[in-house]
Length: 398
Image (cartoon, rainbow, N blue to C red):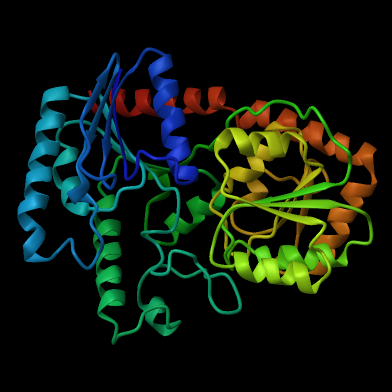
């Protein structure tokens, strides 16, 4: 099978880029041919190695305020023509889009092969991308409600450009043969944004298999993610202050709230108990997770999936998380961790302490998580499900 995969970046900036690399490598290992098109990684040299070819077309995913300006039309047209040439020459059996947000290419891709897209986030369903209102999670479709909820200012050119781009993307996506989402929650988001149920399919994502935990002192807490408001890192700091048991906490990541968290650690008397590791590569993260007693995910925004939780499960680490978005798709309350009401820091602390002080319970939940990972969230399971979707789409076109 020949598969054209498209994504914005080729570097491992986040979960989507990690996922893209893993499925690319996994499909090649299974003997399939992969053509990868990157639309926001700059103009790099094309790659050809065995069953893999990589192309760079950076003008197919410009920022909202530049992609429609006349000064960029020549470059956009050149990359559009280059993409047409690539698809016509390579003749892929299927085209699988990931994070890519330029609708003009959608007009012709479907002429060459079935087009599907994995919808990883809320980019085309929310003007702020976070699906958050000041006091709650947003349950409205993209449209008039965005103005009513003041997520868009009628006087902001950037807001209006962004809204226009997202509306165009949503309209263009209606022509795709299949939209894949990682959780039932994300399917619900697409349904209330006007997509027919028959075209939206849940195909759970996966994490690298980081192996069963090799060391655990029963007292190590880990937070991994961007240090931002929506990720709840300030809630994490307040949760640590409420713990009465001994612990060591590692905060993995960078972000705009890092300095605030460091100041809180000083003020709360937690400086000796909290380590800020900064950004870590995948191998370094694996080492921290392999020694963790519990992973905490206090996300305030509705996580579309949250890969870091499944990474913890692969290491037999129990997870305590706020019950938001798609987290309950992989986190079963009292089975492989705890689900806590969004924003309830006191209960979050209680469940973390229960996990830290009961080694037998923590081990049982960790083992349950590992079992669930192997059954539903491994690379092998995901690739089998993905290839099944590919084959169904290809056969239905014949």
